[in-house]
Image (cartoon, rainbow, N blue to C red; front, side, top):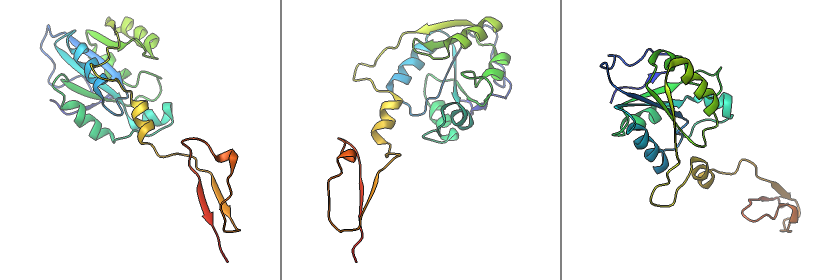
Length: 194
């Protein structure tokens, strides 16, 4: 696989041979899981060359108000190592919501942009495809043969709580605090003794 390209870079160098059907997909791909792999395989089956674009750390900070779970260079390396992925683009356009790959896409002009049925940016992607003559293909979400997961569910299971009530007990004893007693919740209890 080729090294990842920033979305501000020109199309793949060297250029692809004429007649190659290029497929382009985009997303955050913050934590890769089997659903992503299924989507990449289905997208690759639509053509000869698959380019995967993911939103950079700056894009995630601006549009999702969070940092990625792994650094961009690590994510690019993971994506590049997948057998169905031919090239990786790091999308860095913070101005166009859902189109962090905008500049690269205008120059590359892939044959197909593949998306899933739940893509929140389908409308703007479809408009971009009309502008470049790219075919817009919506692939159904196909769960793997085992229990599907999402990046959000994975993050929720490993993420430490962002808010933790703090109770300082000057008397040195434990008293139940019903308003903080929530199933699955956390309480930090500090006891200060003379």
